[in-house]
Length: 167
Image 1: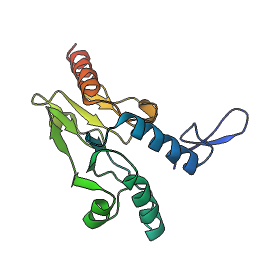
Image 2: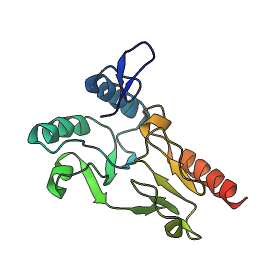
Image 3: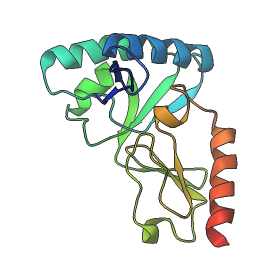
Image 4: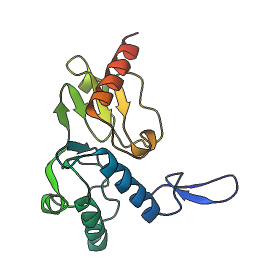
């Protein structure tokens, strides 16, 4: 959980929400307003933050309420086992994934991993920070107004990042 204190002394979660429940409710609402039940969707990690059974059960309930055929690229806070993620509704779980010449990962990968063969490395992990220079696209919720973005929009961002990186 990322807490920020505003200039007037108010503590916010992820810089916007008063607490985790408010943030989760907003993200569930935005997800289901954007994702159809038949859509395939990739989550780029940090589905969970804790390691307790309580956290696993809380996230399982949230994830089961989300539309779409969910896939997960594991993040550094995703500590549960494959059965737990399957119970949460993830149909595929992996470390990285190549999707239409986009290299999906949780963290921005070393430049040698994205050189040449792919359009860009689409990643999470760094929250509101900008991606490294080059062919990278940060799709953390802080960068996407806390909602999923369509693959065609990610491809456009990736091509733009690739072009700017080649200049």
